[in-house]
Image 1 (cartoon, rainbow, N blue to C red):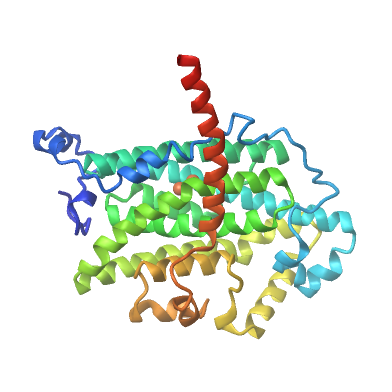
Image 2 (cartoon, rainbow, N blue to C red):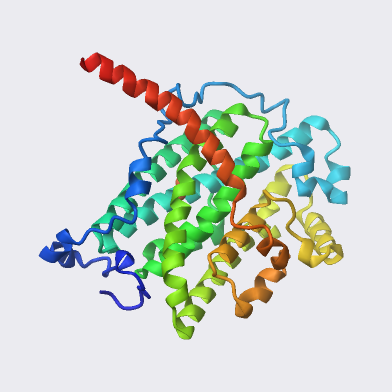
Amino acid sequence: MADGNITKDAMYGAVAPDDFNSMLTLDRYAQRSTAFDKIISATHDHFWDPLDKRYIDFDEPFDLENEAMMPDETQPLLRLPYVAESLTDPKQKIAFINYLQLRSFSSILHGEQGALNLSASLCHVLYDQGAQEYAANQTREEARHVTAFAKYVKSRWGRPTECGKALKSLLVEIIEAPEVYKKLVGMQMLVEGLAMGAFANGFRYNRDPVARKLFQLVMTDEAFHHKFGKIWADRTIPKLTEAERNLVEDWTAHCAQQLIFDRGDPREMSEIFGRFGLDPERVIENIIQRRKERDPVRRFRGDTNVFRVLIKTLLNAGLITQRTRAFYGAYVDLDELAGEGERMVGDEIAEEGILFLQAINFKERALVARAAE
Ligand SMILES: [Fe+2]
Ligand SMILES: [Fe+2]
């Protein structure tokens, strides 16, 4: 087994990424873990195909010129005094909101590509066949997310925007890391946690029915990906030594910092402001001023706020302790989160989505069975 994986349960055991020899060990074939079998076979219940119009139709139009994808009140930038007084033309405001959506969907697309490569990389390091089959299945699901978001961006805007610097460096770091804990914490806990929040938010507020359908379909898969990370956390974190726990916690905080920074760094956003005739310096002044005036603990509000959902995920998994509490406490009220229980905001949306998919998939199977008679 490779060093540094912090393996506490054999089913998450791992080897070095280039150690294919270990895979040929004869005893390995007889020791397949069944812990992930339910998640693996559930893939048939929530099967969907982004190229099949019975599931989603990317040809349905949306009038980007005349309708804002998201309501004004979901856009904190519009509440900055300088932005509010500059974007007075309604069409310009719509264009601004929709351009922010292009940026947001592009980040999601890059994140899905990261998830595809990350889960493929898990196939190379995980030693247990059951865990490998899980990872291969996740890879397949992430591949349809890449297809779906790429098609959506193409249908609405033609082309995505570049991946943000902080997100890109985090994705590169976790895909290249040989340690399983770094991959699972970085992707299944952090990136997937952030994505569940973003998708729930999009499902609730986006005015484009195609976008809402897309978020729901993707969430039916993501809920299971997050479960894989959660099973790892449940079986690993209670058994860590203090030194190991510190390593995992620091890695978690490092990844969280990258993700929060990627969204919140005003310098990354100056390209956006310039496009709409806004002076980036003045927007940044407004943002800094607002941050000073705001109650720091209440910075991220609302049950679909992406950072709030993310931090709740980490708290539930036991990845935040006294040591790192202050870091997250700067963003949310951790006592309030702890009092809310484990149910996540995306769970219901995913469950409804699975019912929709079962209806289509079950009908399909009945037809196939009849045709075979
Ligand atoms: Fe995904
Ligand atoms: Fe995923």
